[in-house]
Image (cartoon, rainbow, N blue to C red; front, side, top):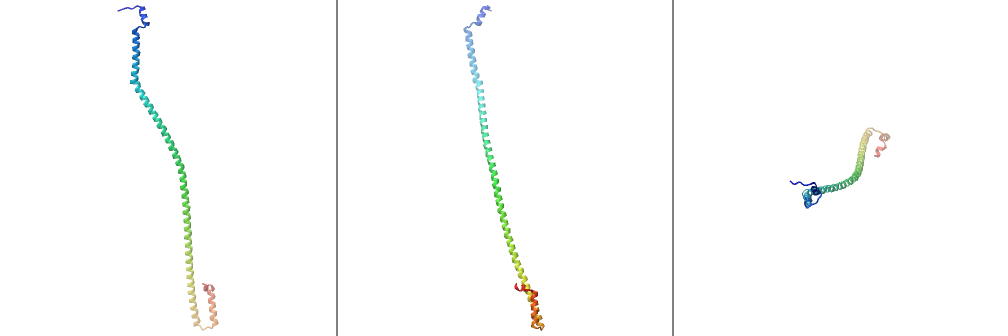
Length: 180
């Protein structure tokens, strides 16, 4: 073994020789090669993964923004439709009211026509009843007249008595009977 003196060792620690420079350069080159190799092999896939994730997040944010805009558009559309539905419901109600009034007017008109027909029929029936009663009165007058004629013929009466009997009969029947 070789023993170096302290002075030689000290000069070597601080002394830059070619070996130290070569080792230092090789170490620096090795570190750069290692950094580039690791960068290519490890950092590049990690960057790609991060970029892909960033793009995915950006796409999802954009999609969420579009969905939000679509939702707002649909909300406005539905609100306008709700307003239109209220107007349409009011229109339907007003049309229904108009139809109900028309139906009411038609029913009232039909009822008036029916009442007029009933009144006309009642008048006709009253006229027929009046005519029937008039015919019955005339039949009764005829029968009374025939009975009276029989009495006149059967009794030998004078003309004054006959006139008095006729007047009494006429008074009993009344003047109105002969006017019908």
